[in-house]
Length: 185
Image (cartoon, rainbow, N blue to C red; front, side):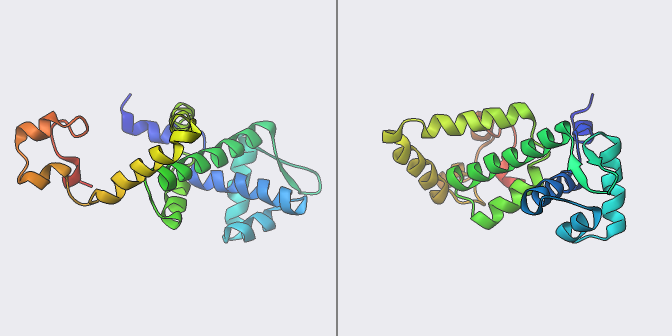
């Protein structure tokens, strides 16, 4: 299978993830959630919320009782909690290790929360835990990573410091391999 087609194989869409999260948050805050509440929370029309929630009900992620109150099924709750966890993991990674601003990290984490695989999320969390595990080296490790990011120019390749990059230098880069990625990002 082509890798690009795997995007469509995510368990839920970005919109569906936010509908699940809205139900979860409303239940936590108010003790109940209805279609109109979800629509208001997401700033969308009631019709749009109703259509999306109907799809989630058909997938067995949301339950609606006789009084039209919504709840997450066990599967829906697991999925919503996984989305929240992935958002937190990725946001912390962006802020603490890459030095991305709080606002931009929130935006980027929201965009990717439903796309990251379970495996990638676990590996990212393990990587972060490894860095902060030893309290004595925690500050030194994080400070060095953040300093490296501050020193790095976001628009130029470190190989450019000594002049133009040669094909051999680019091919020798463990990140870029055959074409400098700074040229494309």
